[in-house]
Image (tube, rainbow over all chains, first blue to last red; front, top):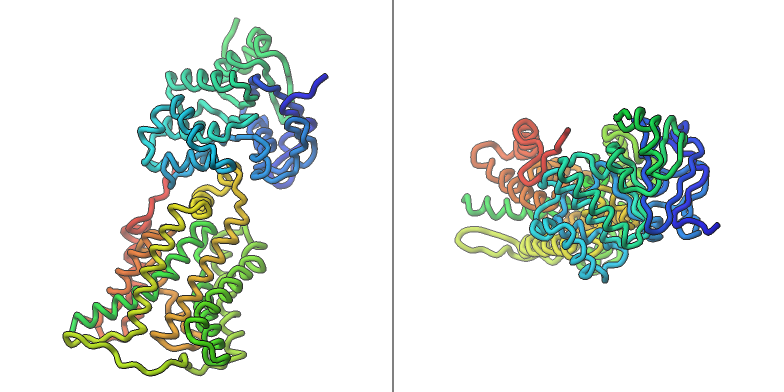
Length: 238
Length: 287
């Protein structure tokens, strides 16, 4: 079997002493979306931080296109085509919107102009408010800056930690639409979402994490149909 | 009379502006007030003295040497002292920086004693106009500080490393995630700030005297300027320096000059009460 674009195996990671994630496998292939759902404290964000290199995994292998990135610092993982959007503190507040987008193309500054037009076509507000400091924007607009900055990387793999957090219901819809659009260009998307139902609807695959382990791994449609999952995590009864 | 005080105030401001900018840049990245800045300035003054008087170099060469030498000393203070301590609370680091300042001061005392020294310079008459006096050296200090302010502005706004410095100060984790090698950026920041402290040492040697405590006397006005402007904001530090510099000199109109040194303290105290984020700083938003 051909290896997936992002392949993480047997990841053990935590903060300081003690692991929060115990031997988790996750993989996403190009042009696909995988979502990790699960209760608070299950280790979802921790897992995604380990892939991004923000937290150093204690054990396990993480490969992008077959190349091992586990153990590398975050700045080198970024150079392997990974764009991670943290849930909080995901923009440079003191920098203007345009400067934030410039930081997105930091690795390839010569690509800025072309990518800038593409990202602003998705989020016209980023052009309108280009000279405003990101810290002075509303929460929803900040989320667009964060997402736009990640797209400026033109990554192979997009790691999203709660992309819909703090957005109004209409904007959540819009955000998921854009994730879907971006994904169609061939980017592998791995996201963590509280908004499990909507996230699974646009996903190809879903992982249910509980207590630092993968409790269930199945195509997203199956998870949506499973009565156990919907009762426990989706808040619906059938 | 007050015209002379304004000139003195501007010279004073020019003396504290470069280190206040440097202090602000360092605070932006390290998130603790580094009390060793005064000692760094003293190092600069003594390197310049050693090169100028000891080795007989012209002062401008000695000044460049002081900037380079102090930059290395300041960078080493990070590598040897602050880097291993990173992650500790700001109060711990503050105490460590005071200890470092005392150590540096006493190492200098070990070699040079407590004597008051000066650069080897030809005596020049001050320039007089409309009853006011200013020396050629003071004019140099003012011009160089203006040049430094503009250079730092251009560095931060328009260069790649400058943008990386601002991004790292703003959000180090995110900077790293976007591919910036933040440890390189932090080392660069220390070196730039070290050069500014070294230059201040040369200025202090020109306008004040060279002795092991010369930087220590400047510490409070530097802190006051940085806090007044908004700590972490280099532009605020420039504005803060001008105001503190003038305030220190103009209080002579109403108070005996021996109270001058207290002005910085009063500014810090009042500011922390009414506007803790300073004039140009951004208030911390807590959710």
